[in-house]
Image 1: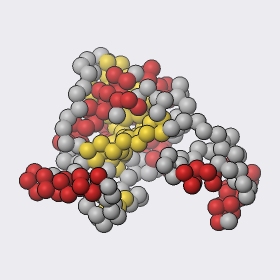
Image 2: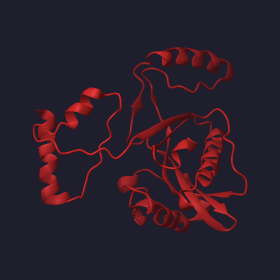
Image 3: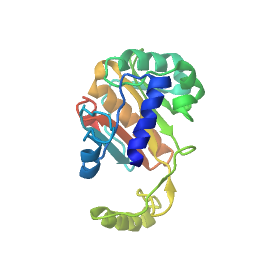
Length: 231
């Protein structure tokens, strides 16, 4: 009943203010009960159509990723806003459901890009041409994440991680009950959606995070995206 009321309110906002062509909803693949309920069309729920699977990867930062040769990189402050915005506009528009970015929000870190900084961006170059961009977004100022407990094989992994962490002074997995702040690989756009360019950007991102002793990177793509197998 509460769910139906929520969708009814959203429908009213859609009619009066939002007037968007469609909405995306993410549902955990193994949450069979939620899938059945939300796609049933009952009790005023909207009609859903599956558009694809989505993969989220949690990448521990304990080693450098191999990087294809032939690319150079600049941080966002050195590159400036122009190549960042141009890459997002020109390379992103060919992808389904790609975000339409606002130049002011991008440069000031507000709106839907709350807290993002120009220095969070990495621009990849082939020669003098910018061919890709990505950002390492710290969302801890407005998004709190806490691990309540580990289950199954992850429980054993967390114990081993604590043991190894005492020796290396760098455990990778978050402790139970304590907040942690991963970086989110965001604003990813590469020329021709080229996996090699993305592999170069990902390798550079991991290298920079290792240098800052940051531990976890979260990234996500549609499974049909050519960039997804790189993760």
